[in-house]
Length: 373
Image (cartoon, rainbow, N blue to C red; front, side, top):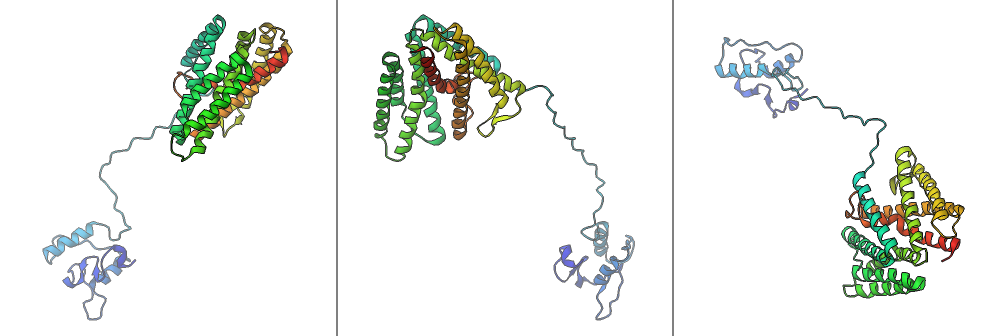
């Protein structure tokens, strides 16, 4: 070890400056040409213990005090004296508690979810079987609120300005035209809605015009256009029962997927899109929906057969799952968990429409094929 490892400047020994003269306690050779007392002392200290100088020894008092102060500490920097001062013992870390085996979290407030679901069901049933136009108003309200949630999230997360006003007006027109004039009226309303989106966006600067109108047209097809198929089902003579069958199958499919997946789910269905969905849950959705479809087609639909209900239930389970995954993809791209917070335990309106919207055209088409329009 050299002197620089001690942190001392060049020409300075461990005891301080070498021009102060030899310390009487060290001795050493003072002849010319010798290494000097400090260097000899340093060399000797590496081979034998340093003698402790008693306080009564001769020499200058300052030198004795300085030497005693140095001798009380370690000679080299890598020598450590034991710390005999009492230290407060740090509290031992508490190991994390392992989750109890056999218990799973549902991931949401089930009481709130069930309460909101029952309330919505009561409103739907009352409006559906009392006066059809009232249920048509329920569809319009759901469409407008869903458009508001979607365009708000697009603006907040991606700075995409999809114009809400023409979308809300056009979406309302689609639903009413579909109920009153059938598919032809709905298509006319879709065309005018797209045109209104293009013109409305022209009132702002042209920056990102193509991006904004593309998002607006996507929103028009995703929410109100798909919801128009519910109005088309409602327009039939037994429209209330067709709509009720559509709602029951979709809800039963979601419930079966949730219950079976929560209890038995192990293999992920689409982990990069929706980690909570499992293949076992999809099997549960198919089984529950097929059973419910067979019962509803046999008992609720005029001219319906139970085997038609099996096919209808299978199609509903697939379309509802794809719709749920589709909205999960949108929410992942936006970096959000829910589209809104309007419904406690459910999220927003769009979080309840995600399975219903893509399922509506599937049920409408199969109903037309099986029992006519």
